[in-house]
Image (cartoon, rainbow, N blue to C red):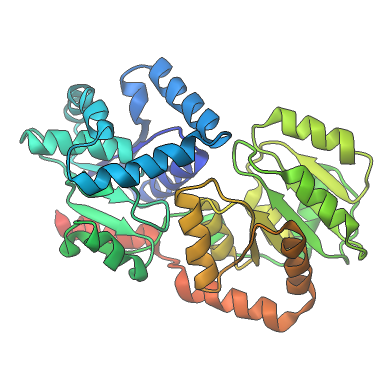
Length: 372
């Protein structure tokens, strides 16, 4: 078996899922490669797609596009998304054949559409699999025609089937995350590591709060931090700004002098920060939410990017895996309750353990082996 994992750089979540699968396959001695699908066209196309995605999420454009997608899917015609991705399917087929891949895994809709065009033309022999990275059936997913679909939770099977995806192709195996999110070392050990990594002297005895704004730094983080600071009890705050340098500079200017606040840019130490902290505030991205739930850290979901993330927040809140509200004061109140109320904390942790699959990567590999 030789596996090609196709992703797209529209948010880091897809890339994280791809990396998790790649690391697992490699550890099992299976040859695999991760490719940014649009880079097969050229790097400029990939960068443009990333820039457009970033712009759309910081305006109302993404919500409008998502709503338009929901409307278009009701007329049962091939979408513009399918037609656009069909344009490069020849290059994708050449890449698959020239490199001898017999299995193709998609963690993004775009390559799934291109593979569907190849399937429709009878040109693709490889086994194909789509991995959902959000807790909803996204627009146009139903027009793809792959061999298998990995659904994050069994309660989403009915939604996907109702959109037209054959039930026998739906497998509720979870969302793949890297192994470091499946274990949680002692909190004191993680806090010591954070002090060394980020050069702070924050007390270990007070509640530690992790504030995440996604890989590109979304949301009204400043408003949230001001609300947390108003809360009278002592606490430590770690703010991860992702690649948003403007946000980081603004937060450093406003809060950089506070000894109990650490402002961090892009970091690959999210797992360690989650190990060290008592509560995480995060927008409801599918990957970050799954990583936090796998870590059994209480989650406060902040404002979502309208669309998939709205559904993610609703799903987690309904299943007791997070608390979701747009009221910033209530977000802070709930966070402090989870820090001090052991029963509430345990209730959320138990819901996370109940609803997260800790064997997603191995289950996906078993499914692929059975299909050989």
